[in-house]
Image (cartoon, rainbow, N blue to C red; front, side, top):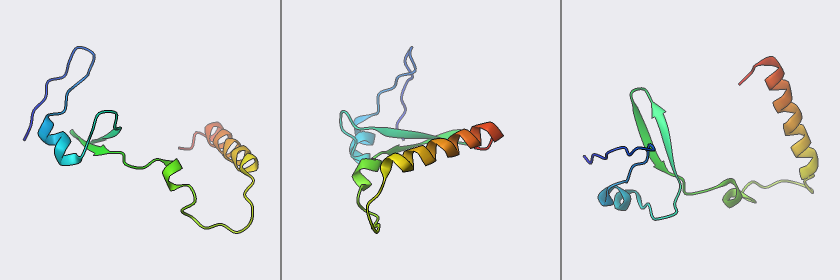
Amino acid sequence: MATVKIGRRGQMTLPREVRRHLGIKEGDTIALIPEGDHAILRPITQTLLDLRGSVPVSGVQNFDAIREQVKAERARRMGSNEP
């Protein structure tokens, strides 16, 4: 078990053994996921852009129409207080 001290601005330094174990390097992004009275630290190894093209689709995609559809759905959810 490793312990860290939280600095004045809420910053912390991950111990070397934790970084090595998780494969975290300078500039990497990690997620801190609150769970009850503790948090899970998980490296983020892929972005949505990394997954681009991984789902086969038929035909040409109209991304402008998709964006408008997403905006409309978000507006609808915000108006009805849905998550």
